[in-house]
Length: 267
Image (cartoon, rainbow, N blue to C red; front, side):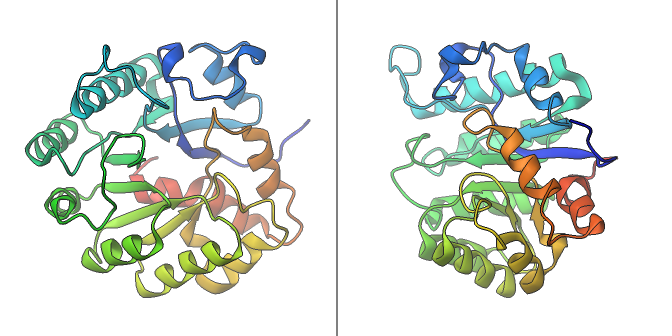
């Protein structure tokens, strides 16, 4: 297939070093290993990609505490950045139950030139709380001070509302548009917070007209392309934007790369 001349940056991926951190449900059928990440993304025109290293479930023998797992995944993200060069923009994790460690991690990542937090997935990182946890507030204050972007897994509508209202200057990108009711909640947050964005990953984009509806309500500048690879097939998401007859080329340019470049300061 020949792709039009669109630059594509995938804002939402989860690269991996070890097989245990590969969250594809069908990896035994996909011939997947670290070197295949570039193969899979490049095959559908994705030249750069962002996101955090995560694990679905953990073995306490490997990670006796949630923070030890978070630190291991953050370190893996930095190593993958070195291996992939400018192709990969790493995201890192913080934890409201580990405030001191999280603040130190923000400082470390700031020194390393990393300005993306997340995707944060509280139920995988064993938070035991939601986004309105008061212990998270100070962590987000420091992230805001450094101009970092926070990518969050959508969960807990009221909790997300409270977090966004408490941090109006913090740039937050929510993952997964969701079904109609969830989608409308995202739109409401985008109306009361100009720094709240949505990526296309997960479920929702397959509903015809969803992207057009979002653009009509909040503008194409508020939507970022994301696939949630390797959980999801990136071809489905490229096609969902590229082949949407309801979008203009300019809107596709913004979604595919322009908005991510602006938020993360990429060239």
